[in-house]
Length: 260
Ligand code: SF4
Ligand code: SF4
Ligand SMILES: [Zn+2]
Image (cartoon, rainbow, N blue to C red; front, side):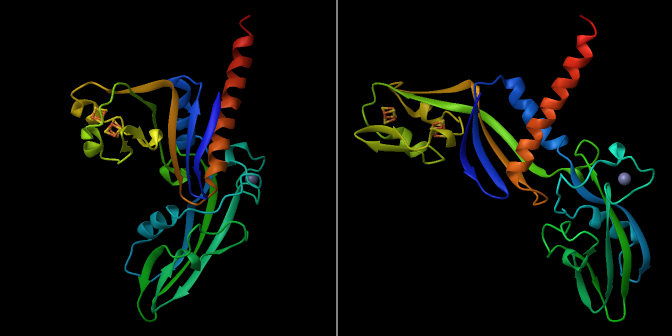
């Protein structure tokens, strides 16, 4: 197995995973979406709500605010030793505001300075003069398989690594004109600028009357594109997804070992 990073920032990653089966590539994608835990608001005690929105709508909006998650500091409630919530499995965020103002995610005051909204400018509700909103929100760790609010990887997809083979090109340029991504260039014969960007649309193949360009897909190599919601670094989500697969594989091996 080999990993080549094409692009990596706090919120986005693009990499080529090669030497694996399609089943493993899909397992990694699924693990990123449903198995990587993150913190999200799950319980809201509303003490005063004079806004135009019902309590339930405010609670729903709060649940969808991505919260910075330190996976080393919190555990899933199901794995915690406490009975009904402790600082190891939950964090409290207070909101106490009075209009006129637009209430933003940044107005939430967290009991843990490390657990704050990933973006401070997510609007929650607009308050008119003298309207008040006072509540306590409880955030817990959860997984995307239970609710999308616990899904740090908001986008995760892959495609087979394209393989573009050129042989016997006469330099007519027809394929360069039809490529929607603009990765083909003419320099006497056609050259490929960035193979990984190819969308495998095969328009170039169809436009080439001499059959000089062939598009193939490598069945053991995959170009991944991942984007996270800011609750953690993109690289953290990818590594945790791989760790989750390892943990499950170990548990399966252990379960099967009793049969031998
Ligand atoms: S269409 Fe075919 S012959 Fe023309 S430049 Fe492209 S590969 Fe070469
Ligand atoms: S398959 Fe499509 S994207 Fe890829 S090189 Fe050909 S025209 Fe461009
Ligand atoms: Zn606990």
